[in-house]
Image (cartoon, rainbow, N blue to C red):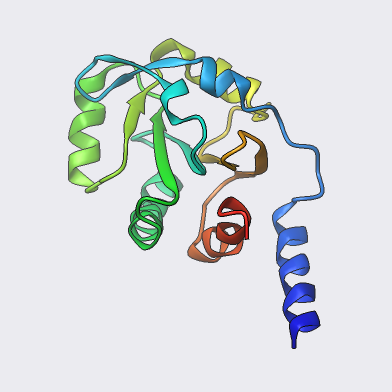
Length: 164
């Protein structure tokens, strides 16, 4: 049974693309973005915590569709894994209204003019959305995902994020 679980876990991770080389998280932790009150926040404050970093935009349908899964995952791992939402938005006020409407209960930031360059530095060479990074407490990017994030994706990566 133990071998079966290990084989299944490996198969899921292979599907998610864990074998490919992952980008450095250094650009993320070097960034300072605006919070929803338009105040600067150094993302270095999240260093040392397992993270799911989700880039989104208000106009992006798949971005909207994955928000409930992110909320559910954060609540299931409260205090153990943090979700960070980074809006590819120019202004905090519309992003704040959006976050409230979608009940985003996790830290949300506005990238302003840093959004696309930051995503590209973090391995999203096409600049597509949604884009999600999974970073362990050592700051290592374990996986990146372009496109709609599903609950199964989050559940599959949780043990690796938690170091289990």
